[in-house]
Image (cartoon, rainbow, N blue to C red; front, side, top):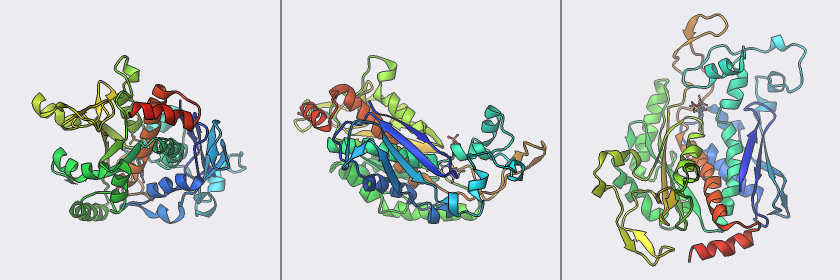
Amino acid sequence: MIRYLTAGESHGPRLTGITEGLPAGLTLLEEDISFHLSRRQKGYGRGGRMAWEKDLVSISSGVRFGKTMGGPVTFSLENRAWEKDEANWPFTMSVAPVDDEQGVERITLPRPGHADLVGVQKFRFNDIRPVIERSSARETAARVACCAAARIFLKELGIEIGGHVVRIGSEGYSSWEAIREAADSLAGNGAESLFKRADESEVRCLDDGLTGRMVDLIKKIRKEGSSLGGIYEIVITGLPPGLGSYVHWDRKLDAQIAQAILSIQAMKGVQIGLGFEAGARDGRRVHDPIIADANIAGGFGRSSNQAGGLEGGVTTGQPVIVQGVMKPIPTMLKPLGTVDIESGEATLTRYERSDVCALPRAVVVAECVLAPVIANAVLEKTGGDSIEEIKERFQKLMA
Ligand SMILES: Cc1cc2nc3c(=O)[nH]c(=O)nc-3n(C[C@H](O)[C@H](O)[C@H](O)COP(=O)(O)O)c2cc1C
């Protein structure tokens, strides 16, 4: 089974990730991982960091001649800020003790909505810096690297993942049906077609009219000194029926998907298929009639896919459709009320360089974190140590 760990701080020397459990014989190239890292960096609504934060991964274990050897794969991402930025990060984030620790400026104004206050309370810090360094979404770069490896494994089996933005603040599709109209025919060619089309939009939205309105809204909210969140959708295609299980709570694939999505910074909700909308409809407008379908492995299909490809925590063989909700970014130009943790005085937050809307970038993170979940559901079914062996067994599932 695949598992991964990330380590590193936003302004430390580098981020590191280790993915363990990848089968042997998988072609794993740095440029294929960096492709998703660069996708994570693009999207309208970014702050000033983009210019110096170009991520290029380097692999230092587990791969020989471009192929995995079955052992842990280590990914490293240098933090450009470490050497370049005005804040003297090698001193501020020094790993070794420094002579003048008192000379390092402390951060004492917690931002509402960030991990600042709970972090200092939990770890008994008198400085918010160590909290920001690890809670910030810079960590998602390491996650994208670790999970992109699982994504490349899935692609070898014909399983594709692709995401797109369906809402930013008040601008979004009018209904579930409108989203299906925009997304389903693209996903019909494999979910990667969907993300490739979405990536053509500055906000990763499939609808050109909506893209324009979302960009205008971000501009307006930026001027107002506030921030925006929204909703994205991830589609996974090429799945056989029967991945996951209903026999025990922790084997349910929908539950594992929800956990992966909510593990991403700022995610506040997740739904599978119709999700929350299902609570507002009667059963006949929710459940998908079963039909004989020779094109789907196993021979059965559904005439619609409002279940989002999962029934009883098990894949139906239709695309898995997941939506995630991201709250607006906590760091805002216009301040909110806070309290100085040192003096106890009521005051206002101080602005730090930040995005206005990170949702288009978060889509890439969400695509990636689902990859190990799906890969493990596959491996649970097929077993196998090499990509060849797994492919042979997987093909039987798809027959
Ligand atoms: C891709 C991405 C980029 C983010 N960028 C920022 C940012 O620039 N400024 C900020 O305050 N929060 C940003 N966030 C959100 C914070 O990391 C998050 O709100 C914080 O860690 C607190 O965690 P919670 O919202 O899950 O409670 C970003 C999140 C993601 C997924």
